[in-house]
Image 1 (cartoon, helix red, strand yellow):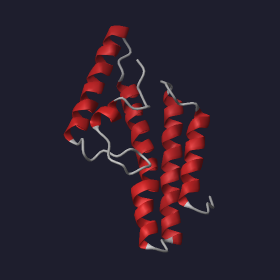
Image 2: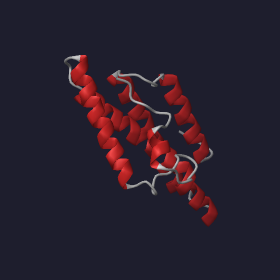
Image 3: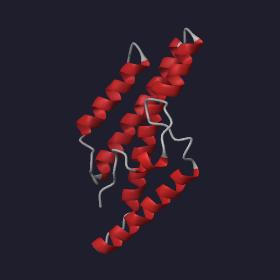
Length: 141
């Protein structure tokens, strides 16, 4: 696709994810589509950088600190969501809740190890682990 700038690629990605209606879904096909959309956006960003380059150092810094961070963040989120859902036990609700609690604990431990390195996606501003754990995206049981 021919986009005039990386911000357009990110905006198209956001719209595509919204159109998938992915919030709160456990549908593996929709999650797979989201991963595909994110992967395409990453390739488009790579192509843009390879073909266009950067005019200034400030433009390059802004791209890597702000613009680009959104796309891999979404890709990693949906990849992890897919992994969690595909491994979710197909048994009782109790077993599923136990599994999901274990996954949440693992995520919290991971985030506790790197509290000062987590960025609010798209802003480049550091945030605390607590705010990340209480963020917008939540897995539903």
